[in-house]
Image (cartoon, rainbow, N blue to C red; front, side, top):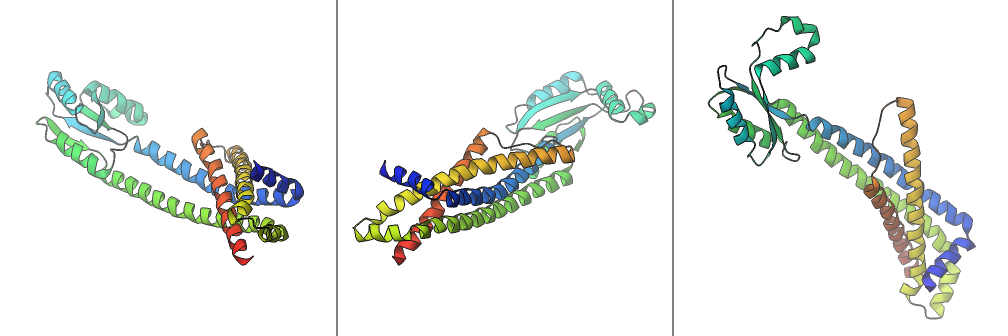
Length: 282
């Protein structure tokens, strides 16, 4: 294709300018990638904490195991419930001794009540849903008390919402800055070929014909910059892991591909803005 050929010729004609453009795009996307990596790990940390959300219903002493099992089977049918675990008095005592080993000698047999531990499905752990399920379980005749950390769940959900909104706002801000920097970088390439563009205009070339190689060039630079930014982000993550001695999650294949495509889109958008502005002045 002529447009692709012209774009590759432009790379060969000005290798230093092309390298500068790719490096600038890479560092712009690198800053965006670091923010995305932090946001990803915060989300994963909150999700792990959210997975611990459960409703614990304490059973009245003397309730038969058959009644408890029947109630557990009924609760499992709730649309928001993932599973229900029956914890007998013996199991509750053993768990308490394991979790609070330093106080194991103060526990006595039958000291702790039996309970039903209700786990909710992913996406159904918000305060409203948890409270509704807790109220339904509380209505069972042999349930003495319900514990689900209402205040803790409310604070966790609020923190997750704040992190989501702040992450989206900062992400858009980083993306906007990256587009501006990329557009300025591409504009340098356009200005370097302004004479060529003027000649093409004089011989009757359309705006689409003139801008197409620049758009392809911008997309290619965006892809290369995206790959380089991804590599830099990975190296930065590995250095942080070695220095701070904690494990962090990296982008999976889908997010990495989206990041590279995002680089191509920003390169394309930056080229379109710069070329369009220049053509209006010619």
